[in-house]
Image (cartoon, rainbow over all chains, first blue to last red; front, top):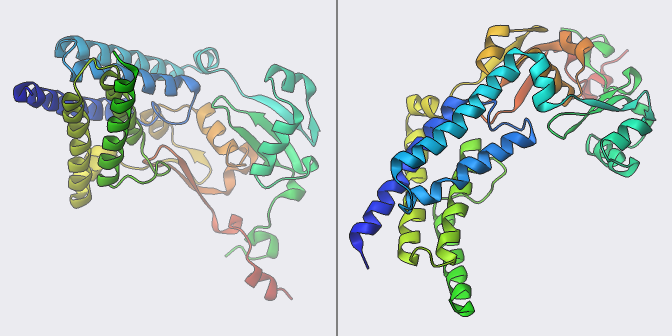
Length: 165
Length: 164
């Protein structure tokens, strides 16, 4: 057993850990939030390049270039998406309404490759079993179905009982 | 390489990882921060070279052990020091105040108004209900938290008793 090589491996592991900590922190909350499938892909890419660095199959410099380029590209797209709504629509897509005023929209369902069972399941996850309670349900860019209830189906608030203090 | 060697390596690596993750106190992924997620990816990534015998089991042990130890050390340091906690995790940031979005705060979170609309829609709040929000914060685990104004807080059963 080569103790020196083991020590070097551990040291490279330490370095990779610190670099990733800084990279994730600098990239900010948008990066690995639950924003889009692409965010997950970037996280996987970053996690996947490091084993060659740790085991010394590539030089530290080569490894850092790979990490910084992927992180830099992600930072750039996040920035563009943030400042330009038009670019955001191209890069992340836009939400599509699946239910409007209690009616499923068959065209939208086809476009999202969803059937009504899946829509009803996402409504149930929000505590809704009757589609008539839904004012609008959208497939969001991160794959979550958002649900806005009709006014009459909203839970009571304090002001509804005349208690607004 | 003989197949049974791959099987043995897989079993050894599996139980080694099981032991180190348990030792590092990570029993659930549900409260994980994005960085925890990356650490899991890295550890999952160093294991495959060990399975195909591209590196020795000892070297895999050193790599995975070093990552897990770093993680543990950072976690402990962050637990002890408020300054380190904020350095590593950042701060929650108010992105919406009394129904109006704070553009500078949104910008520093790399969010735009569409993103905020989207995040609030996922909480069942559409644009016309923004006025019911006292504060919305981007939290450390990259979730949006929403504090309603007092009048828009949920009614309670106790309040029903007090009705005339």
